[in-house]
Amino acid sequence: MKKPIIAPADVSRIIEMAWEDRTPFDAIMQTYGLNESRVIDLMRQEMKPSSFRMWRKRVTGRGTKHAALRSGEVKRAYCPTQYKPR
Image 1 (cartoon, rainbow, N blue to C red):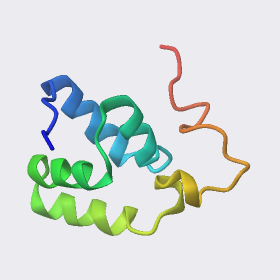
Image 2 (image 1 turned 30 degrees about the vertical axis):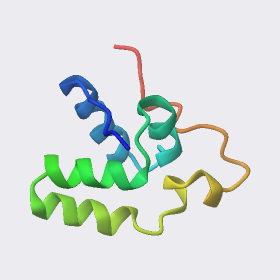
Image 3 (image 1 turned 180 degrees about the vertical axis):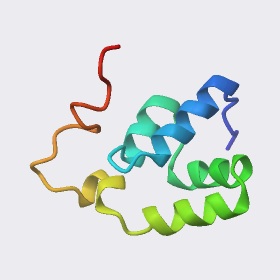
């Protein structure tokens, strides 16, 4: 299976989405075509080792990163106040 070519600006956005607690891996898959294991590989390549370990520790088993584990009450991927107009 071919690895998709990702533009540098997209790499930055994927890292941002992966770092956010409320953005599920499914959203990254829909937007960029990267499954969870590919996102993990990308994070490992692009981040400092200590930052990667901290991120992995934080997201491992987190229900909000997996749509199937989320509460049915959650209908969005981000906090309503996250993207405030400037």
